[in-house]
Amino acid sequence: MKTFKSHQTIGQLEKRKGGYFFLKIDADIINQFQNKRHTRFLFTLEDSLTFQCGLNHLGDGNFFIILSNSNLANVQKKLGDEIHFELNEDPNPLGVDMPEVLEVLIEQDEHLKTIFESLTPGKKRNIIHQISRIKDIDKQIQKSIKLIQESVQPRPKKTL
Image (cartoon, rainbow, N blue to C red; front, side):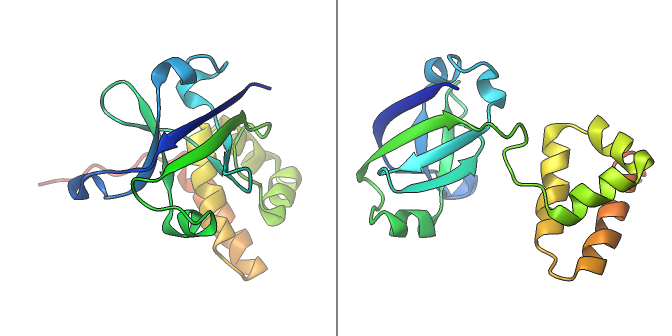
């Protein structure tokens, strides 16, 4: 598993691009990882806060990782501060934890499992994120089935 350690100044995207706080990661660093720009990371700030993340395109060939206000507050940093960080390849190929309900569901239903396994990692993460927000187990099951089945149905074309 590859690791990269460095420090960087906290930046902020233009408001029209979301206004997010971010750390720039040069393309030559990312290209050292096996999956290059598709790598999922465990990102550690100031040797104290670790979270899972992916990369976003900066628009100049380089990448960035979004830093939330709460993450910055946790490490007591703000815009313009220099921050120490560490990038580690996430051993989880999806880069997120699978909810137990979804895991059990796809193991019990071969058809759903086949569909889910055929999805891109991004679509799988999207389903996982949507399911994780639901507290009721029955609703998680219903939503999981619906999202997986809808993922293979063609979307209707919009008419003007």
